[in-house]
Length: 165
Image 1 (cartoon, rainbow, N blue to C red):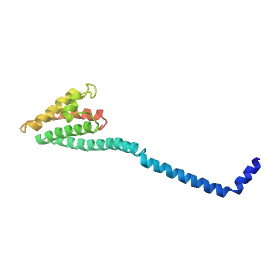
Image 2: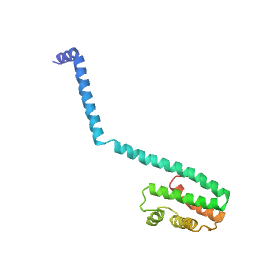
Image 3: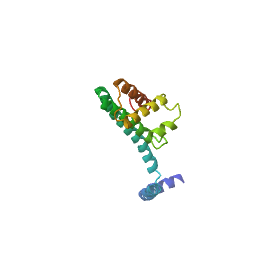
């Protein structure tokens, strides 16, 4: 009985291989068709690239911006000091917006945060208010020491978010 079955298989092996290939091709075609129609794979792949691509982009942008902030801080010129604070605040606003924190602007996002979300949240709110004074008061004077203290507040947040070392 088993010997007859083995003989049948060996005599018709080419036909069995062709039929198996055709069935496999049809099934593979159906799988590809249904995957393309249901977008089963596209959502997780897009989501994966969105999360990791965005995080990588944020980190690169923050590092580039941070280098510029440090350069401006070293210059010691009043306009550069103000610009460094404005840049740090803008980077933070972009990060929190892209991370999905609720609120229409940085003011609202900071107000809606729980006290433990950043170790220096209250200082950060004060630094943001300082930034608002720079924007609203054109003749606002700032010392190098004040600018360094404010930039250190932003630096601590960026470090907590693992965007800079």
